[in-house]
Amino acid sequence: MSDSTQTLDETTLLNRVQAPEGEGREILDAATREAIGRAPVQSVADLDDAIARARAAQPGWEARGHEERSALLMKAADALEANAEVLARLLSREQGKPLNGPNARFEVGACSAWLRATASTPLETQVVVDDGEVYAELHYRAVGVVGAIGPWNWPMMISIWQIAPSLRMGNTVVIKPSEHTPLSVLAMLAIMNDVLPTDVLIGISGDREVGARLSSHPGIDKVMFTGSTATGRKIIEASAGNLARLTLELGGNDAGIILPGTDPKAIAQDLFWGAFINTGQTCAALKRLYVHDSIYDDVVDALAEVAALMPMGNGLDENNVLGPLQNKAQFDIVSGLVEDARANGGRIVTGGAPAPELGELFYPVTLVADVTDGVALVDEEQFGPVLPIIRYHDVDDAVASANGLDVGLGASVWGDRDEARRVAARIQAGTVWINSHGGVHPMIPFGGVKGSGYGLEFGVEGLKSVSVPQIING
Ligand code: NAD
Image 1 (spheres, rainbow, N blue to C red):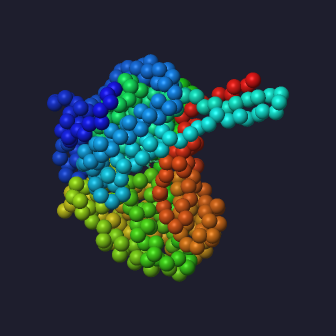
Image 2: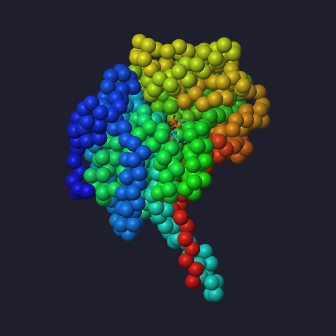
Image 3: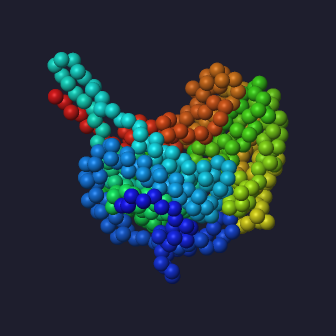
């Protein structure tokens, strides 16, 4: 732990976290496919050691109290801010997202903003009964050691969503970033650890096997997981062994419904970013758009006009606001879904084929019109820069379609606010946005329903979810 908030250069930062020359696993720049560094490959034995250290550090961390922990989280936020540009550049190369637009600089900024908000959110003791005879209070105590497991799409921000409330409540954290994006997360942890006490926040760079051990480990009291529904199920099974409490933020396939009478041009830009933020690789992005027949063609045209204005390419180029897919497996999923939609009557409005002239993993913004429910591009999560646009005639049908899948992370309704709010109440999703899609806020609880998981993050509810309640009766 040090008091200094120093600004590191890219090479120094990378050298602090990467494996020694000749060791580790090579991590490629998502845009250029050139090597950027070597991720350490840590073993299950390393993980066991990390959990033992985190357990040993936990009582001392909890004993510091809320005020001191919050002050240290504020310092960690300062340290991230002092290194924001170097972190954004590393994130841009490793993940692929451009520096500009709602992308890498935005993500790094959100990390310090979330740390600050979490550090300053009060969680008051509640007097539950005080009737002259009985006096009982509800307190929230630390759970113990939190195991955090994250995905590759918003690697730094999602890690902070797991770390900040956990540390704030007096837990220590062992975090395993996605094997696709370990360097940016490890770099962020290194900067935070310059101001945090030893062993309260430990990063472990490993593969799925390490993730599986982390979630099933007897020394883990709580698992914060963000990733696919399939992995979420395995984590639930693992929790039968250690009884770890779980927060599961899983996949989604968010529907947007545009009501008749809505002005397509007025909403086109917000619709676009609702769907294509982080080049579509976002859990709560708009992934299927239901448009009333009366304005269908105008919405398609307005979206295509906005799409034509959004440059895609290497993230370090200041002009670009869209980047590559992060990895080949996701690129193949996206390409396959577009081909399948085309074969099933989908009309490609723009895009529709890879863009090898930009690089191996680039797929252009693709709007697919005239598709229907039942086509894989509509029913499955594309997690990329492709949006199916489905025509509806009766809003009841659009609501039935929105609710027709086994996931329910987010959704949106676009149009007259009062009417949209009535429709929103009928949709099965953790969040329904009105006339926007996907915005998150550190004080507004966020979480899914159905196959999108359970548990809430952010705000007071987020603090409770990394705590155990304790009643003091008397
Ligand atoms: P993934 O489930 O493949 O991997 C996520 C993490 O789990 C990785 O770190 C991986 O190593 C680890 N892991 C794999 N097997 C494991 C196991 N058996 N036990 C424990 N950990 C294991 O997901 P991904 O491909 O990295 O991420 C994309 C998915 O995440 C999408 O479905 C997306 O919708 C979802 N996502 C959800 C949210 C949300 O907040 N709901 C946010 C971002 C992404």
